Amino acid sequence: MIIKILGSGCRKCVALAENAKAAAATAGKEAEIVKVTDFAEIAAYGVMSTPGLVVDDTLVSAGKVLTADEIVKLL
Image 1 (cartoon, helix red, strand yellow):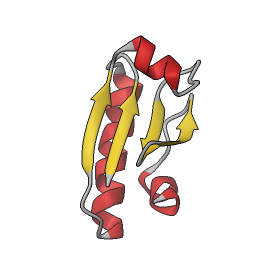
Image 2: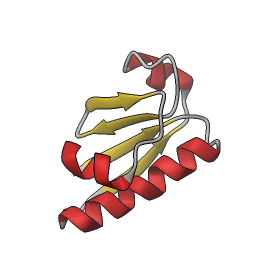
Image 3: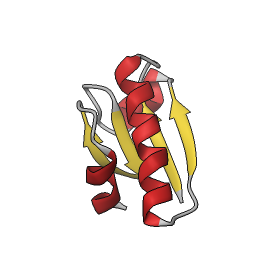
């Protein structure tokens, strides 16, 4: 599983990455966390507000920091 964090690397992006890592561990899934900072690639997902969360090339959240529990439900 590949989880992408879309954003500039701000505090919210870092928090979302940490929550995604914790969610994958909780769900017992092996996941690679990839940080995407290229704005052209972010825009290609249709994200206008960061951070964005992409699971296996499907955008599941944008513009907010999800908790680990919320992310587990999306995995």
